[in-house]
Image (cartoon, rainbow, N blue to C red; front, side, top):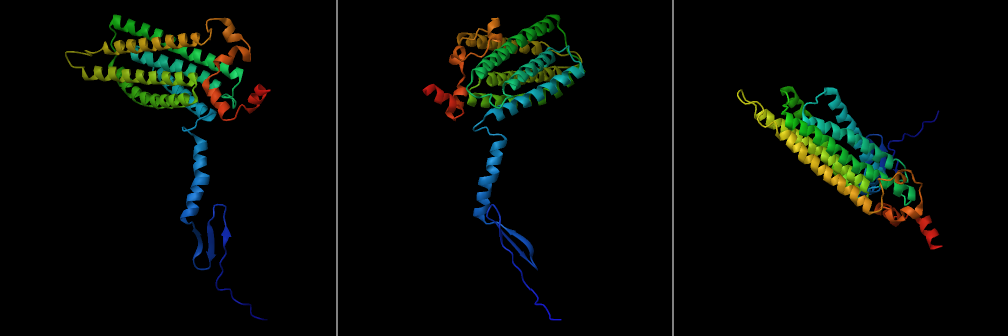
Length: 311
């Protein structure tokens, strides 16, 4: 039987999609070698676009608006559930915080419904009317929240109600994560809303910032009560909590009334039933199409509409 030749070395070279060299030998095994240029091209062509597709604040769109609205809704539901679970209602700041999270849940779900469709930024009459209605609902949330908070805080201030020591601990531990989360989400909503020029998302972000401010007031009131507690003087600064809550509520009420007045000047008759039940008439809403929809036209999302207008 003839003897076969022995192969002492074998090198296999294969080209991969991102220009790498794969070498295989009997002694060294598998070696993957990437040169600098190939690594740079791979990061530029594959990883960077994938990261931008995930969440792009430089050029946001419907995906970014939807993600930040869902994050706001989840955080609002979480903190509202916590405030209902602990059953603490004697502190006006906690009442203000609980009501703000409840209204933030309601308004944020309205905003989520606004961006739930893929064509929510398309320059259509239906989107224009939906944007106006969402903006009015969020503006009314400011007014309703402010009036309810002023009522609870004024009652606590006149009655001289003082929180218990256990409630002060709950306020402290609840306010720290609340103000941080609401502030981050509110800033993201403001940035995306301003870039897209959407009043609904911008105002919902301002509502989240007000919720963060309510958490700051809650923390200030709790810490002042804790540090002022002595054997002879218990909670000397109990009035600071309701007083700051009233001040914040007045600012929210003024902002909500100003927003409603601005929408009325633009032609949104939100006090009439026709505003909430009318059909999508392009002629009636052509003046009120938001600039975010015009941005969609600039990107080419309204090519067919532009072609029809030229004809």
